[in-house]
Image 1: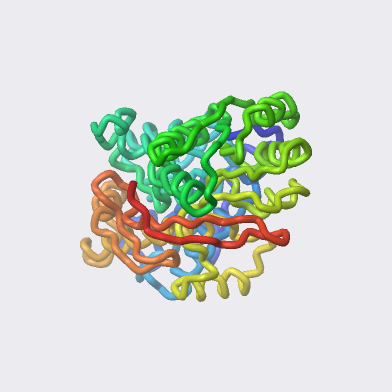
Image 2 (image 1 turned 60 degrees about the vertical axis):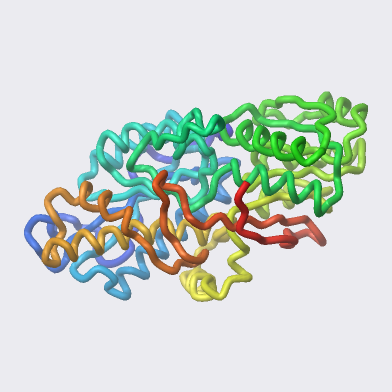
Length: 405
């Protein structure tokens, strides 16, 4: 959710998953040709501070498309991936949504990374009837509406789905872990004022205080800042035994390091912190804690082939926190296309976007991260969460469980 300064070319970067990019030699989807091209858009920050996560998303989506083409998962269909850089900015994400809508070959969009960017993309994609599946958004309101906290859950956009669970679950899981497992009862709460960070911090606070924990102070920071000495001074005076930060690693890493320079207490955050770059940017990350959606793919039998195939493909960037979820998000769109084609005598229907959207409610398969399906809100039915701690210069998983608040 940071405002980034590096900008990709405004032209759409297209990765060809199989065959030629010469779409003039391929069917437009109406002739029943054996070589019909379907494009899956990918929106993520491909440059700037959060690019480590965004590039992992792009590569994992590309791998899913290449795998579907190699295995002829949908006979007669060749999948291509069109990644666009949203720079972690809502306005750019909205522009990218328009580009995807205008490309009639795009039948689904994977992404974005940031909940704030998702808010800018949901309505235009919904108005166009274009399916969107995010592997990373956790803002609860995206699927359950702004009044979800009062129990008034209403799905705002029928085209929006996600393979990541919500901040309602993540924040509650984090609070329970810190209180029951880490035995920390006094916390200073900080967030970056963005939809993701503020929502995560609010969920954490509600559960932590409900368990008997005490919020000894709270503050907001600008995620573009890198000098946090003023808030660190407040933390030191508060007597806090830990800081919970709702935000991402570009600000979280220097916040943690400056915190350790003053008071030796851990910083905890959500999946926006769970990146190898958090440790690279923070020489004093030892002992810090993060939660992330799902179970570590390295510990899943279902992810062994994904990990091996990713390595074989030779991507220079790691799949990072959302690789498995991205592969599953992309595969969900591929499965929906498969259903739409099967229901139309083996051909891509004229109203392909509408048919793919209809098929999403029927999608159910065993994915990289485990069983994949969606509930009535478009949320993943997989509520597995994991708590990690930095030990010896790497994230080490401490607890994984399917969690419901």
